[in-house]
Image (cartoon, rainbow, N blue to C red; front, side, top):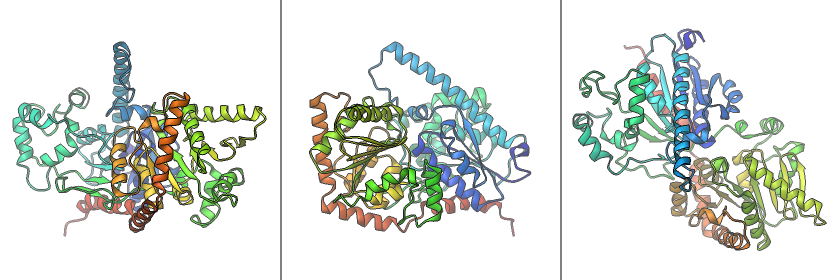
Length: 524
């Protein structure tokens, strides 16, 4: 890619950081854009931990550029998930480590974008797309004088501090006036208070001036620090990857914000097994068998004739790697207690979280050594526990295939799991842990497709003493019983019917092309 520009081709840089749920939907949008606009040189910048995306992106002619920072720290920019139990010394040590990683992360981001744009002058068609955990991209786009667009598959995960407007008006009275008096369709105070306030924090200011040679305060002159009165930038396009059927978009949002519909991943991206992925391409995905011989046990568990009801999905995605699942054994004991007091069966997707997988294997081996036939290992990533009523799988399969075969879904209220369960039309039991998960959990309850959210100690208690396990299992059992009520099932079906008409990626692509391509048309 000469000069990063692909021989004069316009360039599109997609940059997304955070967990799988934060990053993969934006990658799906990048791939869709690359297939639709083949004249573009498209790159995708994200954590090296998401390297599994590389081959999928390459199939759509998207170049994958990794940075070394860990996904969890990207989320910790918003909330220190380590909790408040650390000593001052540990807090200082964590903060200094975080600062070092953050500075290296920003350096790698700048280097990656420099590699793409090189010394070539930017063209009118060049642009950068970021998610809310990749605000580096906004400042770097300013450096290279290209458009910046925001693409978020989740509800805005942070809001401005209550004192922000007062402090901003006091510290930058002229800039405040600049935004308040902004003409229509240009950056205005509505944009600032909705999401752009985060661009004005002190940490960004020093990086802008010291490393990017930009004014420390966006939209000001680097010499005088006065607002750029003679320059009015277009209000940035903000693409949300959720449905207007689910999220109310209030009138005080910027007019440039669009709820496109949920951004579902291509089916092939969701298999951990290559053979299963190949089978899914050759068969009727919605109806037929898509599991290879090695993983056929999952299908047998899901549709076994000896069971009168469908199993219940359990999955916490990246919650374990974020440090919340401190006692995996206690989590498994809660599921066991729920199994023993009901006729429920569960299918647990561990998302490859090593401590949870180790706890599963430990229970399986201890039971196997005893005389009880309570557990069996089906393959290196599939284990049956608790008299064959808990199927544990450390890989991944498409939720669009799995969820319609389940009676309900128990999850962490992440945007991806929430969307997949809504589309499948099944009841949900949710236990939020951080950021936008609390919004989704309350929203699902309000919509009538889930009971009131569980508190975390009622799903993953820190202690595995009998009392903690019993109390958690009782709360979980009660939540499942409520979720399976006929009225909640019916409401879940009604919402799924409405969502089935949406094409979230397609709508986002249309909005994106309208913004970045229209100005490239020759003047008549």
